[in-house]
Amino acid sequence: MSTTAPTPPGVPEVEVRRSRRRRRTVSAYRDGDRIVVLIPATMSKRDEATWVADMVARIQRQERRRMRSDDDLVARAATLNDLYFGGLAVPASVRWVSNQNARWGSCTPGDRTIRLSHRLQKVPGWVVDYVLVHELAHLLEAGHTPAFWAWVDRYPRAEKAKGYLEGYSAAARLEPPPGGEQPDGGAVEDPVEDLSDDAD
Picture 1 (cartoon, rainbow, N blue to C red):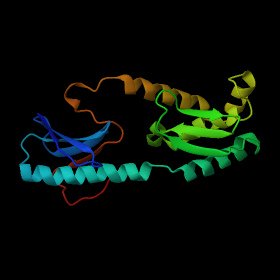
Picture 2 (picture 1 turned 135 degrees about the horizontal axis):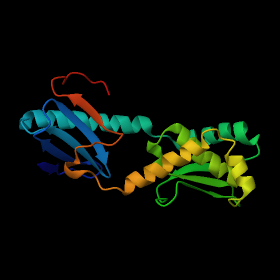
Picture 3 (picture 1 turned 180 degrees about the vertical axis):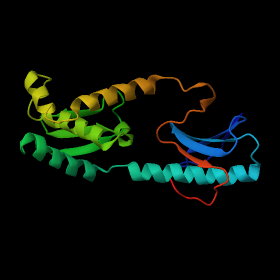
Picture 4 (picture 1 turned 90 degrees about the vertical axis):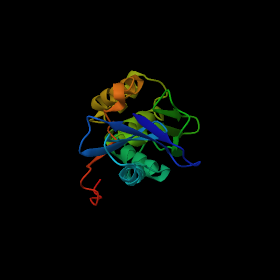
């Protein structure tokens, strides 16, 4: 059984799912624009309200910690340029964008701008580094030529990062499991008895 709480603008939609199988834990995860909170079916409405507020706050704190700013990207690009390009691939700007849903990043060699999809905000830093290296290489080689890939392959985790992004894309296309009981990697979970524990 699930319920969706009405929320004011700017506040995430929250869906509460009660489960008979869940006995002692509460967990929460982000599912698109909403936060899903999983609770035991026997939990009282009062405890539900407390737990939902707590778990939503945890998810939001977790997301804020994970967010990287445009300034972080610029600094990281400068470090990667020094490490793998000998200072030759200097971008004019590097920034996050929210209008790239079919690609991870893009580079316009003419004006030396690099844009990374906001979807990368949730992946490990070494994967973001790979995408930055890929786009920095376009400042030296516009096309996907052998010379381009030679630059990219200087990044030691290039193949692993490609595999990660392929898996991430494939998983994003999958339907959620029946009942929605399997949270994604951004989930937080807590034992019901441990209401005072604020570790996340």
